[in-house]
Image (tube, rainbow, N blue to C red; front, side, top):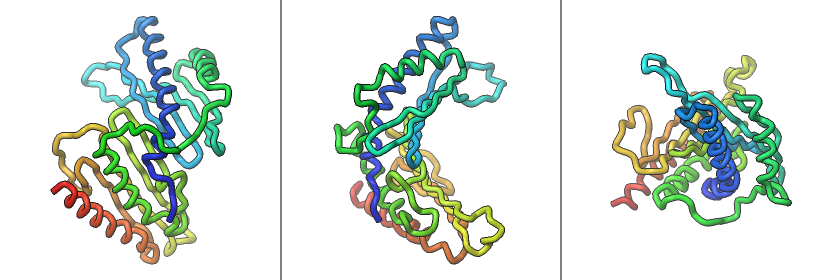
Length: 249
């Protein structure tokens, strides 16, 4: 079972993280100049296989009685091609902003373009976050190449999500789950980790496992013949819990 450590993959996101932060500041300035400075933006970076998406959500202040959630304002898409990031898409809710943003992205890249490198760099995360990432990897790697649909890349997850306040890791395998021709041979397994970037107050872990501040969401409704990978994950969760408790004592 081989795969890149998540901490190395997160290090590889630093260049585009800076790019997204700069675009956020640019759009905040645009909104302020347009007389609409009350909007709050939230950043998200999503890495899934060879696709990298930079997302900017906008949360407009609405009357309290109106239920709402942040809406996608901007999305910049890159494709990973060996050691390069190739810009492949741009969407902005305000379509007339797209030409200026696209020009800014072109001007932001170096002569050799946007690079994709996961070589060890300066550490941007606390010791506790690094420990959670290591424990999460030790659990998720149990399913790497374990069964059909378990070919994750890069790393051990189908999706790595980086937000301002948390890291969300998802390993989802629904191979053949919707096929009526494979009623006895399918995977329906979900493994997710939520790691806050700052310590959080005690919270309920009802129906979820928790290791310190890291929440673990796991379910396996695979066919009986395909539950072995899930059992490996469950066993490793208990091992990871014991290791964390030993280090914390």
